[in-house]
Amino acid sequence: MGDERMSADTPIFAIAVAAELAGMHPQTLRQYDRIGLVVPGRTRGGSRRYSQRDIAQLREVAQLSSEGMSLPAIAKLLDLEDEVRTLRRRVVELEHSLREERASRPGVRVFAAGATGSIMAVPSGRRIRRSTEVVLWRPWGSRTEASDEELADDPDDSRR
Image (tube, rainbow, N blue to C red; front, side, top):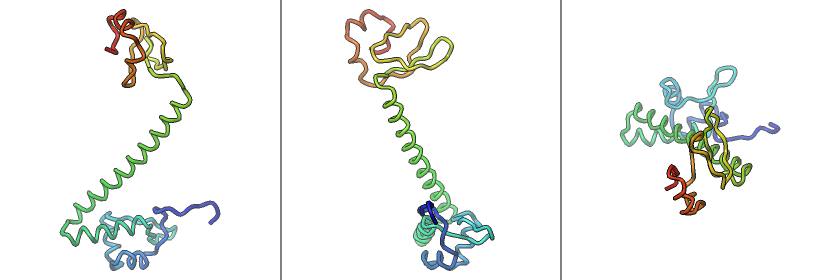
């Protein structure tokens, strides 16, 4: 396999094996595929291939179904779980990007929009001319960076 790595989403199990692992009949898996409940990957020839995540979903469907939940309700639940998984991955990506941005710009604490609409980073300690620029974001606690005398000098200061 070389550099390829197996993940929980790698489709590897044929339908007979997946059915046995999930404790179901292969025909049940075909039905779930037809209604879009658990949709496996496909080979070039069109054969179904189930991943470990698919097997876990099949077991979850069986559990929820045995507890009386309808198949449409189970489908909605699985969709919501997929959405949560996607959003969690996105949050991790955004947190990583934010850490990288902060590391690449030490001392930058404020962002502003110029008169032309351009967005710029403003280094810590720099005063912003209120007549031409608007502060878009200032982190909590930045009030401590300016003394009370500075705030008293600027009646338009938003840090109060």
